[in-house]
Image 1 (cartoon, rainbow, N blue to C red):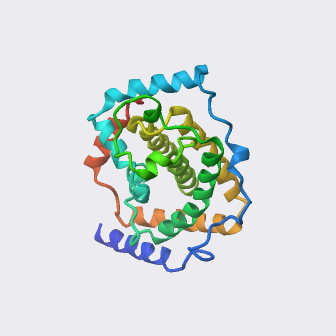
Image 2: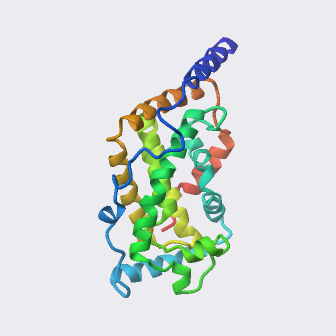
Image 3: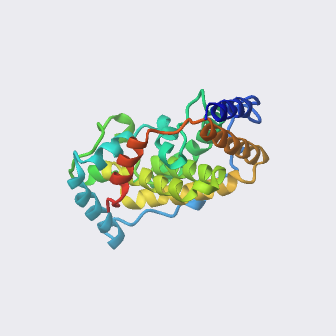
Length: 257
């Protein structure tokens, strides 16, 4: 057992030796390579059946306040901790120290996600659900939340982008990863800060963005390196707390809407 752990740690160290391709400060895509306004359809018109369904979902999910699902949704508000949110699905506890390639990949992808979210938000300028009708939300309505539009959800775009990327890096765990990615987006509805249709638009946005990223040789090379790094981390025994994963699975066993 000890020999196996030492071998795993050696593999992990080797996996992190080389840096990722290009500069970690640069996005993978050139300016204009992906236009989310072409990928994300308009939001439901005000008063339409789909818009009324969004209102109904918002009101129905207010009953989740102060439940374990509400607590998980609050945890999911922290975009910077997204790798940790996928720990149970990955069977690995990522960190900048243990999985530096993954950390670097996510930093670069984040620079592609930001404009992919900002452009359609500006175009559609849809109000958030709690701005249309009152209801509890799981975060403070600060300036960033209150002044940025609802559609599409930035968190859902980010969460589904990361989920798709991780599923490609670890295809043997793709079902669990994508289930967690879906829940990450649904947390925004539980929190009351996004409509359900805005979360779905985030998934559409992410899927189109990842298809564009796959045309980048630098991205595909880095993705393969991240896959090897995660395998090495798992072999080295850097796995999440089983109790945490059991509790998370129980919370996520039932969809919130």
